[in-house]
Image 1 (tube, rainbow, N blue to C red):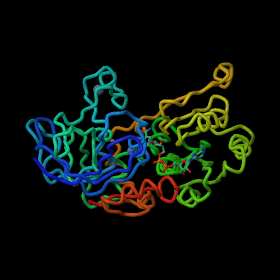
Image 2 (cartoon, rainbow, N blue to C red):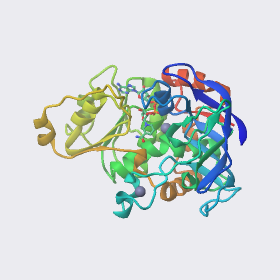
Image 3 (spheres, rainbow, N blue to C red):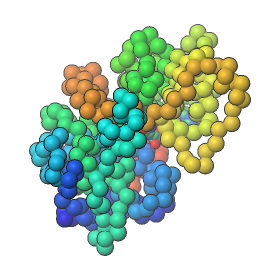
Length: 360
Ligand SMILES: NC(=O)c1ccc[n+]([C@@H]2O[C@H](COP(=O)([O-])OP(=O)(O)OC[C@H]3O[C@@H](n4cnc5c(N)ncnc54)[C@H](O)[C@@H]3O)[C@@H](O)[C@H]2O)c1
Ligand SMILES: [Zn+2]
Ligand SMILES: [Zn+2]
């Protein structure tokens, strides 16, 4: 057993606390990872607010880079000393989706099987099967993707969730291609990554939409060609005006609320694509004329983790970062300590940061 400090959410809406966490040595198929950095993602806040499940207490944190410290029996994909980014979709290779050659839809993804616990033995639910606001964490070895150790961990660790989800929502799920017009609603970490992905894919017009105009500096730096303050004007007509009256080819909802999804639905061109990457909460409902769904055609998609394959995408994106073509450093607004996660939630809620990154 390893005794480490970790960030725990004990109950719905209660402030998080730093507590002792017991992490077992890795068993078969597992890896023990010394966490270097872990970004604060909106999904951690969703967990704390009870928006994902009621399985409290949670060990939060899931956007991490670190070094493999030990591996269990039968682990061949990573070894102690490997610098890795953790992923929350370690595909099984055997389910129907995997066998059909669509492993990004895998519905039997792997996590560690042994529990991490509080000092009194209470079993913890690690956020997204990771739990990396902790000095060490236990994961399935497939959740470790080896990357170039020279890359700055605070930056590349963000590929472990928000940046990959946003970038992949544009590139993989939305299949943005050269010359496309793209609108992104919500320009936090995920939305800005979608903007960066749209630029990488060669989009022409890239419209950043947010209710908070402070978000536009980063959005523009990462590739937005136009901005729309949707606290001030109707984003649907603004997107249409900026796309010759048509609407965008691909609209990405990186907020995940019924009203933003409707803006995406009506802000796209006929036969365009809507990508929902923001995560709704259980009580949210959508009402829409079915005739509009039929009449406007196109594709209405959701993006889990940017439809990524960590083993394919993480090393490739780290390479683009190192070549100066993907500015991951811009996503790191601040580096903070393990005691500062609650304060980081407050800053996130107030829209003051793209990402706070805990350095362990
Ligand atoms: N699908 C996935 O795999 C995946 C992965 C990671 C995160 N997420 C989700 O993506 C969403 C965004 O995460 P984030 O970390 O970027 O959050 P964030 O808080 O950093 O950013 C949210 C942004 O949306 C803006 N916003 C809020 N309400 C808005 C509205 N009505 N219209 C326009 N803009 C609005 C905010 O001003 C902010 O800039 C969250 O729901 C998160 O849970 C999904
Ligand atoms: Zn599978
Ligand atoms: Zn996340």
